[in-house]
Amino acid sequence: MNEQLLYHIAITSIPNIGDITAKNLIAYCGSTEQVFKEKKSVLEKIPGIGAINAQKIIIHRTEALVAAEEEIEFITKNKIVPLFYLNDNYPKRLLHCEDGPVLLYSKGNIDYNNQKVISIVGTRKATDYGKDFCNKIVEELVPHKPLLVSGLAYGIDIYSHKAALKNEIPTVGVLAHGLDRIYPSQHRGIAKEMLQNGGLLSDYKSGTNPDRENFPKRNRIVAGMADLTIVIESSKKGGSLITAYIANNYNRDVFALPGRLNDSQSEGCNNLIKNHKAALIQSVKDIEYVMGWETKKKTKQTQTQLFIELTSEQKILTTILAKQDKIGIDELSLQAKIPMSKTASMLLNLEFDGVVKSLPGKLYRLV
Image (tube, rainbow, N blue to C red; front, side, top):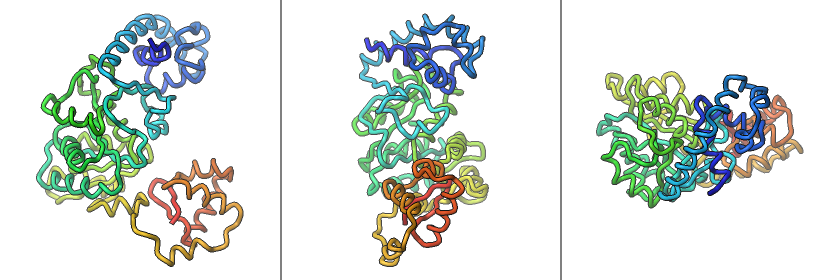
């Protein structure tokens, strides 16, 4: 038995110890194993833990280890891969989310760290308008070779998975229950197909039912593991709006399909656009523009602009920018070792010179 995995699973079984608290414990103790071996007097001194949580860890750690042993038997038998947040196979984009899962369970053939990852969500009561656009946008995304993420639910979710399979785009369904079942059961056939080019993902252990409260929690994974989220049809209080708001909080781009003002299934999307919580999307060109994914070659004018004389510090910024599609100003400042205020000023000047382009969410890329 993988002893480290035993502790990785067990820490997720302790009552009221969520992902943020668990990461805090692991950071202070040095490993998940040490969390289970530490004295109560030491645990309660860890910031954010206190006497009550320390007591819960002491009381429940034995039964948590027993439950973890059972889970290891299940995942071994069913060829499920555990993804611990400190391991290389973990979806890297989730590392930037404070409440990202400590542990995920994966089944299938998936590269979670694909260069481009897109989530598509929407109403369970999709109209022909929404279905047609879903098929259209997925087909247009083929040249970008993305990983497509959704929730395997009725409506837009399942249509996006089907469109991905049709266009040979890898697709993953994020579930709100354990991988010992498929909900809804009518999607079992599609889920099986997805295992060949994509798969299934969950942070819930086997035996977990698809309870209502699990779905909003599941949505943080859908939003957090993607570069952008597309909302295709939503009522005023549709569940997909939760995913959109989470994506906004994660500083990720959100796109929404507009609809008629009197159409109840478009009310949520129209409000996202109206309140500047999402960019309007009509085709893949909107994504390419905002995300800097244009496939066309640079014009001669743009090429010439790159030859302007740069200062030594500007060269540092452009060198970092050249290595990735886009980067946040915080990360750029950190990598360049240049103060934030100065980095912002330099980026503004580079933007005026046509060298750098600003994107939503305080992101930047080279022109």
